[in-house]
Image (cartoon, rainbow over all chains, first blue to last red; front, side):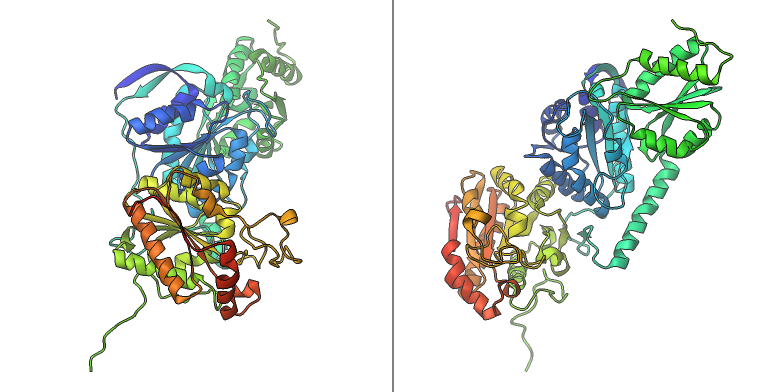
Length: 362
Length: 249
């Protein structure tokens, strides 16, 4: 496959990934720190013969995605935390109506208007619903600008395969940073046929896309049907990276920007003789429960790092259970921990659990 | 003697029995739309976005592709559909709450973008589905379940003339107000809807037909009294006619 290497920002990489994935319908509203996404799409989508609309709000944007997805198109929107809050109703409807679509959240500090610095405090919103009803959103966590491109393509494929919205959970740091990205030039997206889409009833019976089932038994059956899809997602689509986990005595668990920083922490710790490893989640939903449980049962301690007050931590604690004690390193408000900060926590844990190895201070 | 069919259910309607209340206008309006789609041969390329409201089940009665939308978001959903299928006939069917309360933003901006869709706006001055609360188009002094003493402008705001407001958007090309309160008005309303669909097919811009419709149950009037109420009272606040037509035809 022919590749071109370009220095681009994370936000642009999202746009580039969407175009490669065959997205030709983008609807979005400006909000920092992801304004570059609608700006990029306003140029590239029409250049590829598609439709770009700067909608009047995030409410309108997600509903335009609903319409375009219902019509059978690969449609996308993007926003940041407060705007994603506005889209929760739409996401709930998309799962009930079984519509594919990609939503990008370039997370910023919250709650409320918060800040514009990077954060990971929308984990609950992304993975635990956010909107009303029993449902899940496929949630992917990029940790490099290359991921921003590749996971966007994956998001479209998974959303279509399971007829469910998929969310890219990025953050302001990833959105704004520039890195060299390999772009596959002749990539051909695998777009599925959609016999359920609104195309006009020529040559077939009329169809109906809805989430309303006033008959209680029908609605229960519908929910059970949705959860059979989620069970399949859990069986087939879990993705994570095991970074230097062989022989690890301390397991770091993180995703996104935190995962990226923890890779440096692991390397520094290992250089000091501390056997640290990292489980970096790529799919937050479906959550890699089995992998985490297995790794946790082989280590002395788990350290969760997230730019939040401890959202992701709750799921890690739930899965790890009593296999190992779970520690937490968090920063919020747009503050980002340094590698050294986390490393100091690792040293403290090491001193506690591995007393025969005295961790060296650099 | 052989039989000749002179009147039948349009192909664009299913044979499901309407659930609407006796005297409700939805049945008439559904039929007008269906007759037009048959006459225009447009059933197979028609895409409908149904509202939240009494007509939430419109999709059981319309014999073409239909979909749901979250409350008020209908014009945005219709925008998404039309941008993917620009040659299909896309219309939204909305009540006064859907269009002029919760959905005001989506309504105005859809018109402002001149989206090539048609909005059918059923105005019965009440929230029928939820039991008769105040609507943006509820008349002053009208009693509803949330304005038991009658709507007060100072306390509850005033009847909203959303269609007249939309006329200010250059993207709106055809805006009209009809009623289903008499045979003459029904025929006139059908003409307006046909014109609106033609505006869409000619790709001229945004079209909307507001239709004054009775809600006997929540107005606490008989069906006949309801028709009279529209003809004598509602039209004073919401006059019938073409509000805007820049088609030049």
